[in-house]
Length: 144
Image (cartoon, rainbow, N blue to C red; front, top):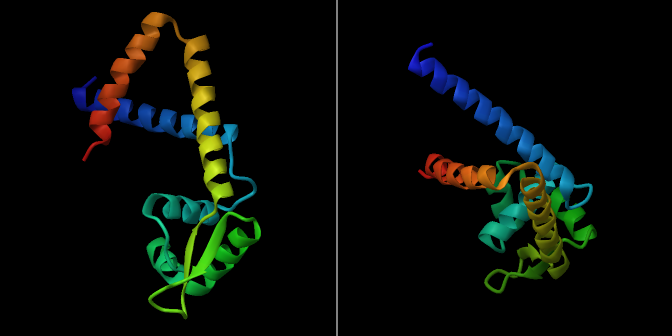
């Protein structure tokens, strides 16, 4: 087998494995019955900070009307809140509520705890060390 075939097989196996691991992690904790678009908005607000609905729509590549429906649903769930823009009173600045931030933190902790437990129970100490070395390699792959 050629070296390029081995690399291609490793890439395919790794890609499939990462997808499976992501699905398992997603099963362990959720933000509730939210659509992928709603989750994307929450994560964007967490990552980038407060924003207007128009800015969110542009960032997510959707029409402002579609974003309006997402924002309304998230507000109804108590996950985001709106405050008047101090520079332009016609606009609202959207941000995550404290309750939403707590949910995000709890969800991440649940996923981390599940993964830590799986590592501890399914891998020997030697395998855990191997995994640590592999993580360093994966970080190098992920860095731009």
